[in-house]
Image (cartoon, rainbow, N blue to C red):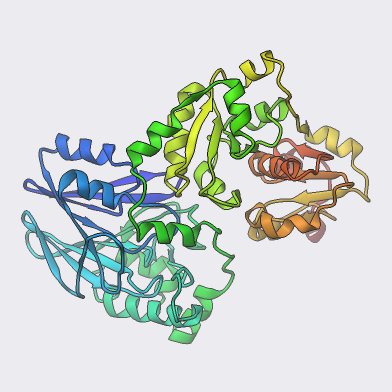
Length: 464
């Protein structure tokens, strides 16, 4: 028997490869199938089942493409409805893979079709359970992502409580918990950096597994402090219920090199995503382009800040990163990348085309020039802001930019920072795209402000 966790850090997502004898199963695959096909070949096995724990909101799964290429059967739990062919397991139904068994445990709460898959080894022992977004390490799934459900958040939280107590708690403490996500995912609020653990240890550490919590206390704990989910989440759910453009076609289209004049013409009706580093974007970029650096939380931020993920996309990126960018965009349902700028920004500048810049200053300069009456915008999230922020700064989180934009005025000057300098450059690019240009980015963000300046923060005032 073999169980392998295939973890993708930029999405905080875990796919699982299971093998026994010469039969295999994959749980919650990502969009791209090549790595799974190579795994199947290298393990000299055949893929029998593709188990999906629920209709994911934070990424588009590759189950349909993978089933077409392997002949494997797609398995969902009860209540699942989709446009493609799949098998709907009933609660406690058992599937054989070589000498092991997979038992479907229907665990509604995160969504109505959420299902955990319990692996029983050759001795029929509860070896591990693949919990999807029902149970994380340190957390449980947020009970508000069920699209078009007749139930409200509290109803779903109550279902989640019953699911955990009826299906997870009775498992032996040695059972390994394998969730679909780790720290950094927006599908929970308190996830641990660890990506697996035993159930027994989680009963000691996970607030949601506190056996002393009654259902009302559980509902309060689980629903307290939830931020709004990213806008692309319901779109990804719908895509996961549908048959989408093939991954191979997405890559082929995205790898189209575009000459400068063609790129300029396409830009009139497309969105330009600049995938370079923040300082490179600041020093010169195509007017109207959106900065989303590939070395950060690239795909989730693209899904969060684009007004329409189905728009045509053209890229500015280093040549050796173009395919990676197209792949990562497709993971969150951004499928219409139609090419990239041939020759990069250097060729664009050399040809005499217009560029724009973002003023970006060191913390030392910011400390010297900022006045008490000037506008300082903090684009971090609420939790980061609460832990410490500059006195008189204004919180306008990037993850709610579309609603926060009304707070900006075209004739005002803004100093903008995040925690480290990545999100603030995204914010600057979005603001410039909407006609607000008197912007000053603070390099290194709040971390540099705390480390390299004597500017007062709320936490310092409290401590004093």
